[in-house]
Length: 296
Image (cartoon, rainbow, N blue to C red; front, side, top):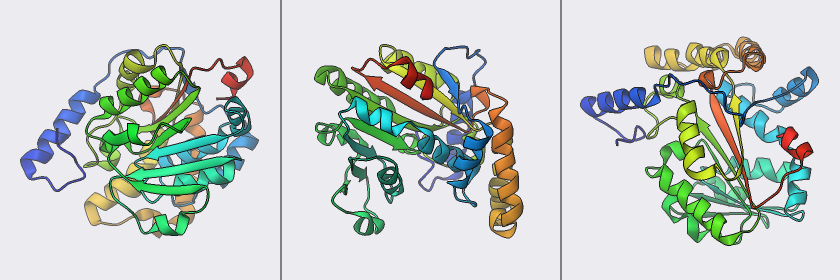
């Protein structure tokens, strides 16, 4: 399987595009009980939108809204008030800093296949970084109770091995553990084009659930939708393909209004197949209260 992050020749690009298109085809109905939407009232929605960057893509906005919405106080209580996290594929580590502001008694180890200049600036007593491959996840998970990825797993060649290694460790350790993985939907094929190894359809999410998480407390959150996807194509993908121009920077105020309106409309049109992104939340070796389960 080719990686769209690297320079490919025409034939390799064609194979990558067609194979991902075929793999993303999904004609099945998605009526599984684990699917959720970002359930927000107007006050919550406006507050969460205020926490996003005006020029972020619609997908990035809804992902950041998801992280802010999680009931971190209640989640932390399950783990004795301490969340010791590791992020795989952390890039410059922006989510370590983001979660440090949201969670008390939080520690973070960011891991990536390459180091970033931002690591030195963001390192403190709670935040550290390590250069490593995703296949080495077992080297860093032992003293943790929370592992997460954000827009990273599509860049891992062995995504199923990655999930298997984590779940095998959790099952054997029998200790309470939290996983959160944010994955690009199948429509991201057209939004990002040559990007990573793959995208994830709703059916692919179900396959992962059946293979790794069927016996866990599993929730899949559908983020964004067709309106958000259209705004991305209009302001980012098509202008970049046709003229190497990012229209967000040319029409900042207009983009902000259109992207936020698109997100608001998508919240009313819940359909996992049209999602911009997926957030998978997996609690293991824990009995969740109905109250907490409803807040996720």
